[in-house]
Length: 141
Image (cartoon, rainbow, N blue to C red; front, side, top):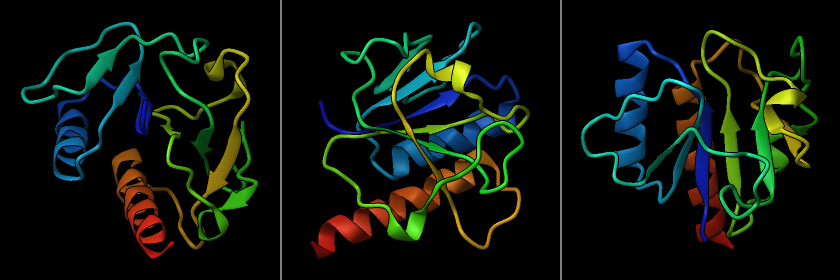
């Protein structure tokens, strides 16, 4: 399995469309949504709904959780500037209406990452920054 993004379910249509655009245009090979009421959008062929995060066969290691450096529940430990992207990885983003905490990861090991010099970002904006960083660093190495 290669890399992908995992996010919390968010029912708001504009956010679902933005994520659909990011997944399609950035050519993300795998996308997982953790939540109980998934609604498929057109052209989401790589989308997996209501995933079991505790299963490494469904969501591969390592897991990088994106959260503010001074987050209220999880605090970012590693700067995106310093993150070394492995070929296989899962990038986990919370919903725009709820902060992630460690219970969302169902006992999995993970590294918290923050995006320097950014205030609150919508999850799909943060994801586009992370994907750009991944592609840039992997192409340079």
